[in-house]
Length: 287
Image (cartoon, rainbow, N blue to C red; front, top):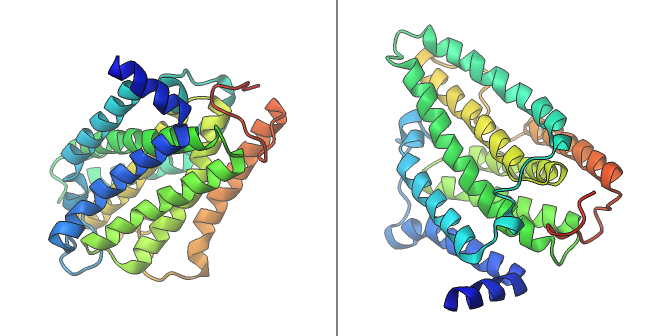
């Protein structure tokens, strides 16, 4: 009986429920800094190394399990679109956006296979993909599932996209708490905000969370493989995580990502007849 009441209340108060869940996870992410203070995991370099990055796998698995448990508890499978089948409309933009990070992963993998210092390149690649599967799944369920899914129930699509994307970008500020440099953290926040808009556009176009999960996984894997390649072979240009000087050039990549997202949103609006200024709940007509 209590579960039925909880689910009914959560469906009736979607926005409040989503904000409460977001607040819970912000608390989880910031609690170590609140109770134990900041810890420099970079050794004073300002750059997180590969070992520090992959050490978060157990943590990501636990976060993913908790989020999926909340989806089940609230019966928000329809709102979060976790179990929704991807519509064909998302296939072309998804593959188009996957090309760049996939080429990067292949390139960095070739670097690793030719690096004498890399003892197990296949193991490195497998660890990276496994970690970022859980990163992509957990962060997409939280931001594009709970937050974006609930906000669009009462607000315009544009508002839901902007708020959820800014919240996603702001979460990356926690990296500064483990010693990452301020310029790199700001660059990550800009990139993440732009990617948040792109992820939202793919969720809308495909009416499923999985296009965003897949792109999130591949994009993060590309960045992390760049870190691994740089460590085992010295400085490798083109890594997606390094921004030593936050200059106007650092706006280029977020700008390109945003333009791609706008193009996908335009396709979505043209296909469905929906406007970004309109309220289009997840369970409403999708076109």
